[in-house]
Image (cartoon, rainbow, N blue to C red; front, top):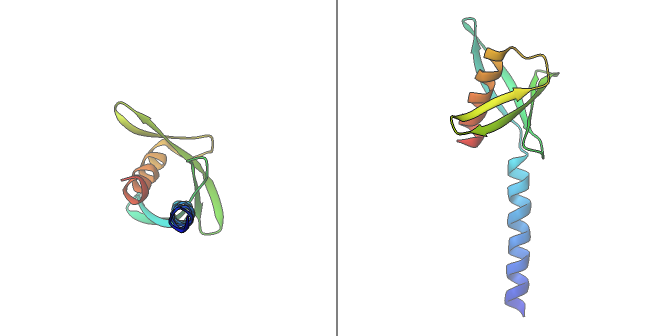
Length: 96
């Protein structure tokens, strides 16, 4: 009986660890117009990512997996080129 309880506790700890790691914020750098901008990325529970620049929320972006690869969408006012660059940086950091 002790072994099954230990296994259950181990699995619960592993799941909590994975959820915590998945939700960790991270920083990316995106080159735009000859300079580089640092964004803080916060993974959201629904698979989207919140993008912040310093203390300002830039928007929320979402990956869409298609046959041609991952495309990125947003309902926020983010330029298409910037959205693609942010998406590629997120892929390299978290999804790759």
